[in-house]
Image 1 (cartoon, helix red, strand yellow):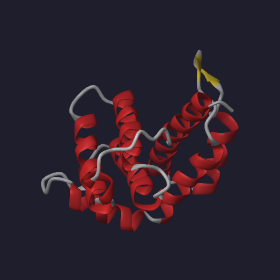
Image 2 (cartoon, one colour):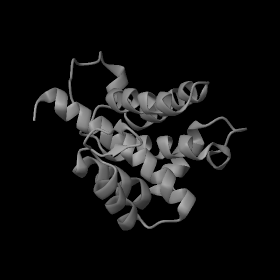
Image 3 (cartoon, one colour):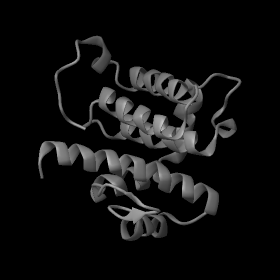
Image 4 (cartoon, helix red, strand yellow):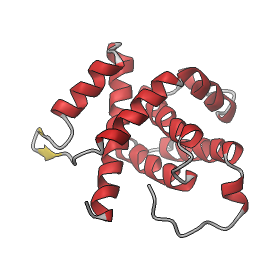
Length: 163
């Protein structure tokens, strides 16, 4: 797989993880069933005339399972980064899914640079929202990353293509 194809597959995994977390919240579907449903029916599929990219299955599953398994810690960390008048439970369900998936990567996936995580999930937010939600997500992820990984923000960013 080329570097570009790998990036595309990881981006598709992140988008799929957000969609799956959103679906799970609305339907109360279990994690195993939701993962299987996405991998069997959505990843790389054509749906309503749109061709979806093939997702990196390992990354997709890691983000979904990780966000679910660590949700209490993730939600606590996110609440500390959100404005007091906008606690996590008041946010739109898809925005909540974006923040939980990104927070999992920022907090638990130290192998991926925080700036890469932030950029990827801001792109996901822009796919769903036209308004201020993407900016809000960016601000929350940036605050979380600066607390969780200050060393990545103290030095000059490396020209790293990971992600």
